[in-house]
Image 1 (cartoon, rainbow, N blue to C red):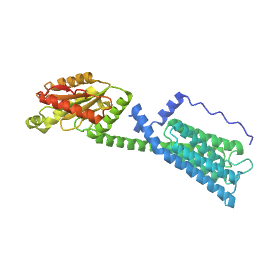
Image 2 (image 1 turned 180 degrees about the vertical axis):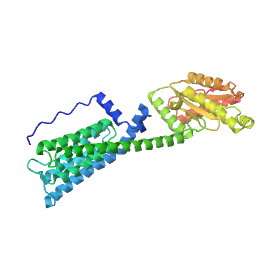
Image 3 (image 1 turned 90 degrees about the horizontal axis):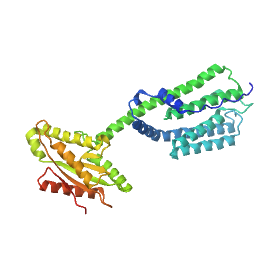
Image 4 (image 1 turned 135 degrees about the vertical axis):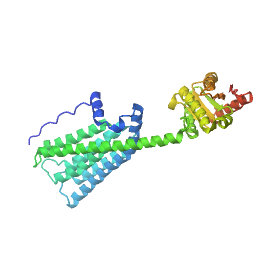
Length: 381
């Protein structure tokens, strides 16, 4: 068969990628927003990276074993010297190591494609005039891209592997002509490989979404107060420490407000624990509304004690925030009147979050000593 040039690879336009994402979208991911999709993608990339590296390493080992078989005469050669096949096996192993270590997914994709291409050429692409056990070798090689397609996370990666499989199949026909069984069955075999890869990638995505959602629920339960929807003590320790560190490193003002419901024991005694829970929930709803909901750094850190970390606020604006919460909470609600005391402390240079919390607590105690239902600001140390 006369050799002919291969068609140029198509340019992957943004519109094509959007269409591919829509085609490959799973029902399990349709309800996720952009931030959640990116978080899910990163989680999948972290989980699949060592597996992709392992699959490539298996390809290198398989190529080295075939070279050894050819040396001892157990397998007919397809035209390449065994020493060259061993060198290529080493290069593929190096690509596997690079995939395990590189942080950029684009670089990992390039190495994965290069390693797959090299493995396919030296395992299943005979030199002109050599045939070997081509059908068996091709079938053995196809396991590699099939496994790798199942592990690809981004649509562009799946598209790249599908194109690689098609290009290699076309290259075999260009170099050696159509198989004896005809080109129809050969292309059916090739497209079936791609189809199975896409199916496995889809099921892997469904499993990843399920595991990701379970992890999110467990993290949320571990960091959220079930009654108020605010952070609990664990969630406060993690998020407040991080927010305080970011603000102080950037030189942004930060202030802490500690709030306590006045005479909460009397409320429980008069209304019962269900009534007390409603009062706590009302304060939680007010704080969530005023601090940005789930993104805010507001927590129930004790029975009736709450805290808010306000980055970008000084003592004056934090005091105004506490006054607004106090006035809104102090309004009669379902026949119940409850009041708040609050302490405010503004961060000073070199102060830790624990020290900031201690000064805010002292201001809170001062508010209680002065008669409760008020806001006190801690003096600068």
